[in-house]
Image 1 (cartoon, rainbow, N blue to C red):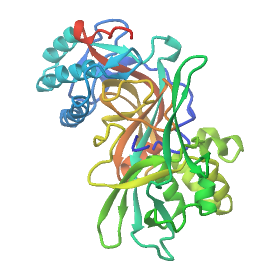
Image 2 (image 1 turned 135 degrees about the horizontal axis):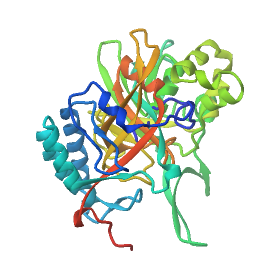
Image 3 (image 1 turned 180 degrees about the horizontal axis):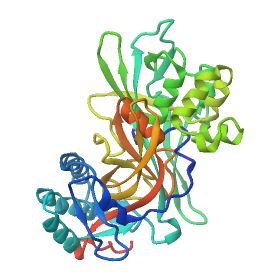
Length: 409
């Protein structure tokens, strides 16, 4: 799974800013020295990439390593049209050599237009605009043993957590993944956040892998789905998503907006964190409102997305895994926050870039949600916390037979 996953607790479910009209022509004004070309058709965006070629090459290789292990006819996504592993892989392998012409505007443009097409994320114009949010990898002070200071456990995946498929035959055959536990001869939902953190349902059963100081930091670790544990001896250990309790994700940011605690226009991850810090008497009720609970494992590298390959900062995105092609190359257009040295939002900068669809998230649902991975550290945290802007998402496909849709089954 997505490393599961920040976006911030609020931003994964709510469009908090006013809609933004995206005008592709302005991208030529960006201070970048890479791909710039006029759109070959009226429906294709102006191509521009605000990042370096090496980060894209790394992300490409990680998707190629995943897709090359799948049977060629495996369907990796149903939207914006059905993609097989072979189609997604062929597009990646054809695109990679173009990186050698990254600095030649005319060369790159001519070959791209001749060989590739950009497919909007939805054929319905009403669904073409998507909301972009951000997530990052937090760094959290932690201990491998419990102490009075480090009292809040990070749990590994419990042995009694069971994932199964529920098959429904009527009115049409469907399969649904369900998560729960067996109690006697009964199937039960797995423990909620309140049952785990407040009632101690897992306490003392040996599932703890580390402990942290602050329950707020622990909550945001769950939202992000991975993190770096900073130990007192100087070591840093990487933890990543190992499973979840199957309960629904519910936005605590939306809860506070609906209750009038934080104005909609002020909502951000930073503002949410401040409210939780300033109102300790409300903290338990607010945090347990989100029933979803994430379990972790130690990782040698990462963070890992739902492809089980490391995510690349600024090049990996998370989308709804039920819809869009896993591992595929995409192109995004939106705005990113401009943050000053004090970590404050001071403006917005239009941007566009090529990205790889390498992750998913419990709150990233539907065709109009994209989460951009910003990396780790304070700068990534600040950018991810404020990222909340509308834009466009396109998937790349080869023109001709290699990029044609598979026959319906």
